Structure formats: C-alpha cells, structure tokens
Amino acid sequence: MIRTKILVIILGFFFLVAIAFAIYSFSITANYKQLRINEIRQTVAYESERVEKIIAEMERNAVDLALAGEQFYNAGNYADSIGALILVENFTAFRTSVGGGIWFEPYILNPKKQRVCFYAFFDPAINAVRIASEFENESYDYHTQIWYTQIASRLKGKYSTAWTKPYFEEIGTVSLMTTVGAGIYDKSGKLIGMSTVDWQIQSMVDRLSAIKPTENSFFTLYFPQDDHVISNAMQENSGADYMVFSHVMSNDWIFSVQIPAKEIFEEIEKRNKIFSVFVIISAIFMLGSVFYLLSKLVNQPLKKLTLGVAELGSGNFDKQIEIFSKNEIGMLAAAFNKMTVDLKTSIEQSARERTEKERINAELNVATQIQSGMLPCIFPAFPNRSEFDIYASMLSAKEVGGDFYDFFFIDEKTLCVVIADVSGKGIPAALFMVIAKTLIKNNAQLGKSPKEVFEIVNDLLCENNEAGMFVTAFMGYLDIPSGKFTFVNAGHNPPILRSNNHWSYLKANRSFVLAGMEGVFYKQSEIILLKGDELFLYTDGVTEAMNSVNALFGEARLLEVVKKHSNLPLREFTVSIKHEIDKFANGVLQADDIAMLALRLPH
Image 1: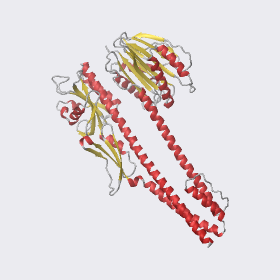
Image 2: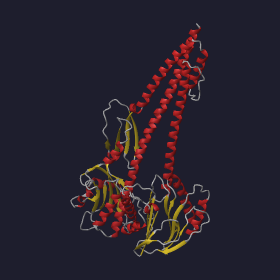
Image 3: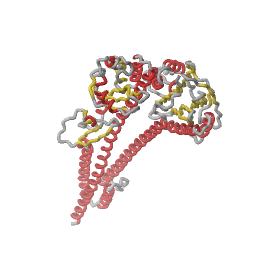
Image 4: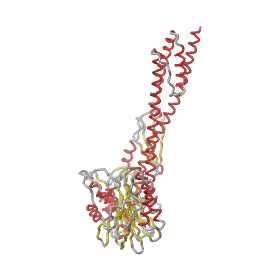
C-alpha cells in the first residue's frame, strides 16, 4: 500500500515535471520564433538599405550631371568632345550605373539642329565606358521616348529627380532598365534639357535575389505608379501559408519578400521534436531509476532529485543537485547538473555574442551618422555666391575615419576653409575629429584670427588627452572683396596654389600639430588670391597612397596630376584626382582616409 502511494506520488511528480518542461518548451519556442522573424526583418532592412544607398547615389549623380550640363550650356562652348568627356569621366568613376546622358530640348544649343545629346555607357566588349553615337543620330527622336516624357512630366525644379517605370532600351545597353533624371535649367528657370542615369533592372534583381532566407522564398518588386510588377521565379508550393516582409524604397518602388511560414520555423519545430524525444527518454530513464532505487529503499536521494528537477523545470539554472552516490540516481543527478551548466553557459554565451554584435553595429551607425552629419556635402554649397566656387569630398578607409574638411562664412565677406587629419583611424579617430572640428568652427565664428583659433584649440585638445591623439590641420580665411587669404598650418601637408596659371606648393610656416603639447604659438601668413587663382587642400591619404610594390603616390606626382586636370569643373577635378590615385594603386586597397577641398576664384 505504501509502495502504491509512493508510486502514485512519483507518477504525479513526473506529470508535473512534464507540464513544467512543456511550458518551458512553449516559452522557448515562442522566443525562438520571434528571434527568427526579427532576423529576417533585419536582413530585409539591411539589403533594402544597400539598394537605398545605390538609389541615393544614382540621384546625386543625376543632379551632378544636370549641373555639368548647365555649366556646359552657360559656357557657350558646345563642342561635342567636351560633352563626351564629361560623361565618360563621370561613368568611369561611377560604375554602379550602366550609363546615362545629357539631353537638350529642341534647338536649344543649335537653332539649325533639333536634337543635341550625349550618351555614354559601359561596353563589356571593350571593358570600358564609351560614347554611344547611335543616340546622337537625328533619326533617334528621344523627345518622344517614354523615359524622356515621364521624367519631364515628373520633375519639380532644380535639384529634383524623377524615376521612370521599367522599359526596354533597344539601343546602347539593349536591356530592361529604369532611369532617374534631373532637369537642366537656364538662368530664368526654364527647362532646357535633362540628365539621365540608367540602372539595369537585372543588376537590382541579382542583388535582391541574394535575399533568400529559405528555399521556397521569393521576392517581388512593384512599381505602384504604373502597376508594374517584377518578381523572381516563384517555385510551386501550393497550399503554403506565406509571411510577407515589405519595404518601400525612396524611389517609390515596393520591395517585399514572401516566405512560407512552415520553412521559417522548420528548424525550430525540428528542435522541439528532438527536445521532446529527449525529455521522454529522460523521463523513462528517470522512472526506471526511481523504481530501482525504491527497491533498494533510497527514498532520501530520490527526494533530493525530485526537488532539484522541479527547480530546474521552473527555470533555476543555478541549482545543483547534491547527490554523491555512484549508483544510477547519482549519475542522473550529475547528468542534470552538467546539463544545467551547459545550458546556462550556452544561453549566456549566445546573449553575450548578440549583445556585442548589437553594440558594435550601434557604435558604427552612430559614428557614421555623426561624421556624415558634420561634413558639408551639398553642392553647390553657396548657390547665391558667384565670387568663388568650392567643392570637397572625404573617403574613409574604414566605416568611419579621422580626416575632415569644413567651410563656412565667418561674416558676409569672410569665408573660412579647414582641412585636417586626426591620428589613427576608426571610431576613436572619428570621435576625436568631431571634437576638433567643433572647437575650430566655434572659435573661428567668435571672430578670432586663424592663429588665435589654433592656439586656443590646441590647449583645449591637450586637456585629458590620455590617448595621445593629435591633429594636423590647415585653416585659412578668404576676404572675398580683396582676395586676401590669411592662413595657418599646424603640421599639415602644404596646399597646392594656382596663381597666374602656375601651379606650385604653397610656401608657408609649418607649425606643430594640434593636441601635441600645450602652449604652442602658431605662425600666420597671408597671400593675395586673384581671379582665376585656385587652392587645392588635401590630406596625406593622397600622397601616401601605395601600390603593389609599396611605392608612394608622392607630392611630385600629385602636382602633375593637378596640372593635368586643372581646367575641369571642381567636382570632376577631385574625381579625376581620385581616379589617378586608384590607377596608381592598381587594386591595392585604400589604407588611409582621403579628404580633398578645392577653392577656385572664377574669372
């Protein structure tokens, strides 16, 4: 009778343990399912963001081409070779696009010629960008093409862009594509033409096809404005329930991934089955052990085991069952203790890895946002000021970098330009760059001279600089009416000066770096800039670029490259210099940040 009661109690205990394990299993399953869904959403968001960046680059390139077309029109020099050169250099540097062109309205450039256009595209047959003369034929009426009429009807003014619905181009690239365009306007605001940048839809499909979380998942591209749908091949999977993850991109395309719900949770369900089998086998083993121990009258160890298992089932992974016997119950207790430790270790390790990954991604995102938000990146920077032209760019060797540039007005007639290089790379350099840039700009806008600004900023940066970081920097004030340029150099590379159409390195007193030591006195110099003069500022990532035999790009080669491309518009000027650096490196990855700033006083 007593044994029957004990048996009933034991069976009841195992029933409660089974319920506890079931509840625990359902809880873990729900968490795993949510984590799986979040993982897929993050993947879709990440891949969508990569496409968004390409869309933004395409739009910026279209606007830049439109501005180049406007300059071409205003210059009055309508030589076909210049228009062709602009396009070839642009699409050689911008390989994301398959090609594009500049298209003028009827009789705008030549009253005897209805259509004037330039179109360049990447020709895989020659592995280079070339001009497509087929478009320049008078028989090709691009004004009536659907892509031209769609863009013209959707443009909303200067610097705006518009996308076309998908269309098949039978000339040039001969492929299905979509096009983004920007308007070219004369000084009165009249539309005189447009620039276009073409994107092969197959390249977008190839990129998005990589998003395949499961075997039978597929994606859909939908252009709602024209009821146009593009989708990769959907495999036959009748009767399946799909979960949809969608994202609306900046060009109004809708991107969605359809995944069979069964496949999303297939691995989780498989684990649950294995876990259930494991629990059942463990329960049977435990029950046999209990009967064996009952026959040996070992009720006390059984009680300890029961209490320990109950705590484990309730989620207490720190519980250790204190049974030291070497029989089956002792072995079972040891197995449970090891399982508890292993499970706890696995959960903690997974949490640490996930937390570390999220922390690193968050730091990189914050640093990238800080850096991109700190540097002026809209050009023309001052469209209402015709006394000067300015353009700058920064290319980091990592996600973020320590090089920076800046330009701003101190008052209505004084323009300040700054370029600097923080020691080191990555997040520490980016954070130190934020501090240095902010201090320089704040003190300059208080009306202090360049010399005074650097002396104050140097002392402030030296405070609590336990990491021993420093900054090389060059800053100058341009008095626009007189052309007087007052500058100071804190250990930075000498700028290149164009004066009277002669290029040379600017001779200046080179003082000590910022944050190197307190109490440094900086020397200030002055020159007069005339109409047609130009300054080119850069960081040592330019001159210290290396090729496969560890040779440096060098100052002498930089001076020759600057002379070679000196007559280009400033944006094309800096792009050409970067192209020369890449050609010299011949495939060697960029090892240091590269920042460039060009200031020109037009004739």
